[in-house]
Image 1 (cartoon, rainbow, N blue to C red):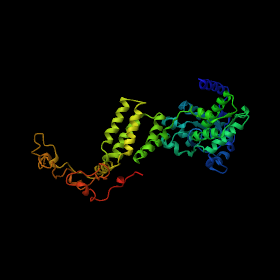
Image 2 (cartoon, rainbow, N blue to C red):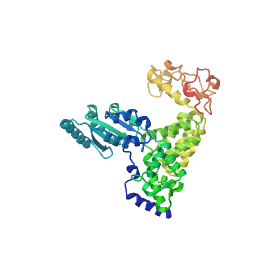
Image 3 (cartoon, rainbow, N blue to C red):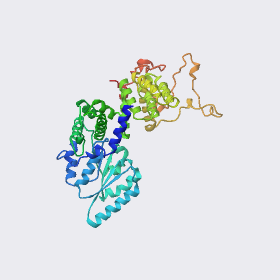
Image 4 (cartoon, helix red, strand yellow):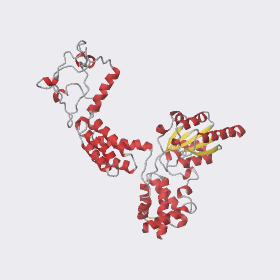
Length: 451
């Protein structure tokens, strides 16, 4: 109850003024923390800004790395007009109005226009295409900011006409310096409140903010408000943890692909602990459990395959459980399958075999179906020679007969090459496990990928 009262009081306190992250926004390039590769003296982006020679750019980076700050600093350094716009609530009509104003400025007083488009990835293809001709002819200098991978979210035409600058998450040392600046600044920061911070609390916020300056400053402000309401002089680890707990874990579309990739590669690499970690991270971030289950079904055949034939039905059962049980309980079913697939022997022999067969179908003259394999059940089929010479395997004592089942053009091709791992051994009649090693080297895909 006391914690709830403190939280409510802190919320009221924060409402009375602008957020700390906004008040402490850098006013000059020298005040920017991090991004030294781009903004240190003599580095490319800084030189373009200070020389007012900026052409269209895309600033790509995680939240809180300085994209909007850099755009505002560009606005202060340029002689061009600065038009800010958010792609979240803007449309083609808004773009046309900006274009019209830009034409008037250029015609009346020779002044160019910079369009700052925040969340540029939110523009669909039609909206991006509306921008393209004006970026191309130089009427607009586009400064786009995005947290999403621009190679996924922007059209190739718009991307090719812009310079891409990637902003990296801030280092903990940069965040510590920023937090201390906020505590010391008596005009824009928390210095007037007389607050200090314990070393372990400072380290905790810096380390747990994941390189996000905005998140670090917001956490510091919340921790400061909790501390002030409690009537103590210093922000302690307890209040730092409470402030950080108010942030939910999320990731963007581009990191979605990276996390899923890490998840699959961890299981393929037989690391159950890593697989469970990435599973937990996806579920905590709100990833669709059906998507996770589909990836596990694919992995069961692609990476475990013949080495453990039970992997596929188990993964399929988990996919069914997602629909039948649902969250949160289905997390246990998904974790069960992750551990099973990670610890199972691995083989991609069926995947490689099918790929080779598909390549032959596409690239080679595969020939007609051999006459003895053709359908012989309809009237007149026997007259055409269909089925002639076919031997029914069940009529033989072994249940197997040596006869050709493929067109002659590809009869010598070998697709399935067992790895010998787990259950992936050659059980074909007349071949045996030893024969499988005499048909030439295995493909690269049959190399054991476990660490």
